[in-house]
Length: 227
Ligand code: B12
Image (cartoon, rainbow, N blue to C red):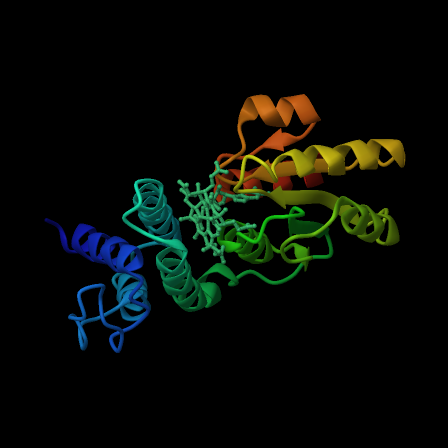
């Protein structure tokens, strides 16, 4: 196995085990002293593995975590431990993703009402900042009213809105946002992403589907070009 593949495999394993850094135990109580996500992501960057590969690897790891939850092998605290390990890894990645200076184009991002999953939203927000956007990150569990109010207050300067949802139930709240924007006569482009969302759903609610954060940034840049 190539060194780069080996380190990505280790990042994946450690995200799945929820090991933030070398001080953490794994699920069996071992591995203390071995590199965790923090040290491995740092090592990957130093070994010239790009952030895109690292983010894809984190995504893969979380799919495994989700499957373990579905089959009853993992419980909510296990998912949380993996999420915390990802956050630590993202802190190491942040300076790499923020290398570009800020422009003035504003983008609003939020996880919709009822949903507290924020890893994907945070990755997208960080990458938008890295691409030079001024990001207004409204956080998680944000109501359609609040989102529309914020967009209204900043109107004229907002290039687009990025919404995230990971639950099939909360995803419907993305439609509430697009509906409210229409009611208020605001023709802002809405990008939607998150594991629950599909192209068909995005089309149905009049939003733009993004399979991942990279596609999201490309589409955000297209919005600027379109003016
Ligand atoms: C970690 C996790 C949690 C953590 C979240 C911690 C956190 N800070 O986010 C905790 C433990 C809190 C949690 C709670 C719950 N969870 Co949960 N969780 C997950 C898990 C394992 C990983 C999610 C994740 O972070 N993935 C990694 C990120 C990087 O992926 P992503 O968000 O999809 O983002 C990528 C793209 O989609 C995109 N993207 C995302 N958003 C956006 C937005 C825009 C605009 C753009 C452009 C791109 C973009 O960019 C990212 C990178 O490219 C998933 C499994 C899965 N496969 O998704 C289950 C999962 C989403 N959870 C699930 C469930 C059921 C729950 C709970 C209801 C469990 C419970 N019984 O309490 C609660 C609900 C809490 C709530 N009200 O929100 C189910 C949802 C089932 C469904 N179809 O609705 C899943 C799928 C697990 C499963 N297989 O059953 N969860």
